[in-house]
Length: 72
Image 1 (cartoon, helix red, strand yellow):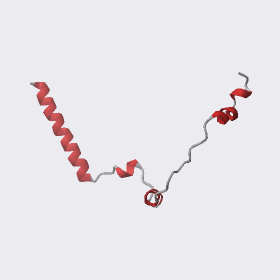
Image 2 (cartoon, rainbow, N blue to C red; image 1 turned 135 degrees about the horizontal axis):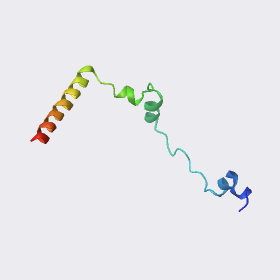
Image 3 (cartoon, one colour; image 1 turned 180 degrees about the vertical axis):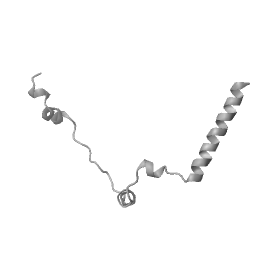
Image 4 (tube, helix red, strand yellow; image 1 turned 60 degrees about the vertical axis):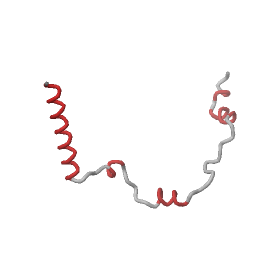
C-alpha cells in the first residue's frame, strides 16, 4: 500500500455513508439541555453543613464498630 492509499481521504471514501445525526427532535429535551444554567458535577454535589456532619458522624461510628469487631 502506498502512502496515498493510507491517507485519511481514502479512508473516508471507503466508510459507509454517515447516518443522520438526529432522527427526530424532542423540544422538551432541547429546552432542558440548552435553557438551564450550566452546572458542573461539583456544584450538584454540594452538601449543607448538616449533611456533611451527619455523613462524618456515620463514617466515624461505622469505623468504631469495625474496629471493635476486629479487636475481638
